[in-house]
Length: 257
Length: 257
DNA sequence: TAATCTATTTCGGTA
DNA sequence: TACCGAAGTAGATTA
Image (cartoon, rainbow over all chains, first blue to last red; front, side):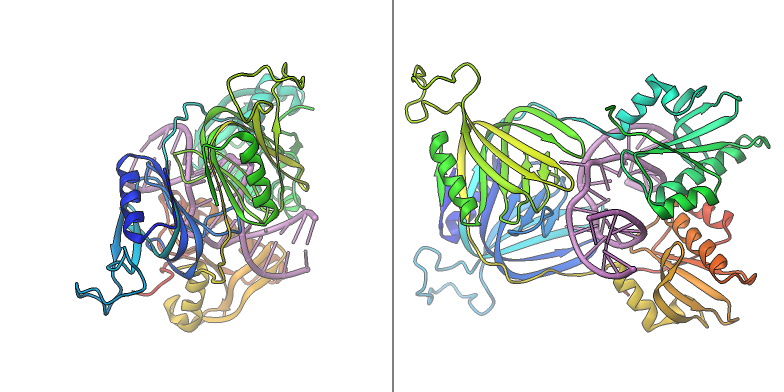
């Protein structure tokens, strides 16, 4: 269902109907956007594409960028209404510019949620298109090349890490959090493995260091714990950090070949 | 410009025209999606909303979630064409199901880029709507409540950190990276401040630790360096890490009151 | 609900 | 271009 160049009142009705029917609703037109919540933001008038999803998500897209300029996560309540600007609060119609929208100065979309309390408000002064879409989408995405794939690769062929490595557990809990792979080497020393699907920086090294520290403390044994970072590659600074902290690196990609 | 329930050939033409005109193009219909690049993914047929932006970004949205199920970043080249399924490669038209799209079994959108090499392909078996939007959007977002606001707050009133604190530099370079705020305390000891706009976990503590370590080494003085984490709050594990590493915490929000 | 960590993170800044 | 860190990160998982 699509309206082109609708009056604000008609647009309002179509949007309200779409929200009611749990459709995916899109609105394109000239609008301002205000956000208040975890932070706060405003943007002055421009032509933008707004999408309201039945799960409560809201997206405001400009013609640039992969990310929306404003948004609201799933779980919001969407609301739509027509509004009069200040100074035209009376009912008598002195506005001669418009015929069917004599009383509406703006179409407002609001998406609100709590925890955290936040609100997105889109105020349209002109609507060029309203559409509502009802469809079915049963299928889910299958994705490969993830960190999970890298883990499977090592579990199936532990020698990829090093000869004699024996995985004992995944997601093993320590006082610093869960370790990706926990095992022993050929000399029966404890090994902590941290996996990253792509080239890593200093943060991943620090993360591995936290796990090694925690495990050495948890085991309260004086036997040292080896920490091995597994990733396709490391940055220069990360490499230096690895050396400083006595950690090791094995180059491996999530998918073979 | 909007087409409802167009034939695949007409849809193709409208989309090609929209891309050519540097418009924002949306397509809603039943499609499969394949991605190959940094990772790889497929999703079987479903009704989805596809947006092609003139800057090269592509977004595939289902009716759920804030994030697109598939996407491509800005900088891609968009391409659109009609395709025949395997087994109907001949030119003679034996397909009686469709009238105007006798030769087209699918409408394909491809968005490709290099560095890294990756490709998104959306194959529509049915198109319910095609729209192209041309608008203007001159204005930019103004955002407050960021880490930068927190920094300004402290620079304007250093006593918020602690009495006697004197900021000397922001973004001061160390061998481990740039420190948010660098200064001295009332006793003239070096102070490293790491800022976070929201509640922090262990990663922020490790980050601060890297800077303190680096600075102690860079200054090659035996005088110790104080590290202060500034954020609204810390998690329990982060708090323990702070203590373990001899670091301090000051509770402060990006915006006052 | 809170905490933790991954992500095809994206995005901006800088060397 | 690579590196580094912020983000209203979102999303998934687990306690």
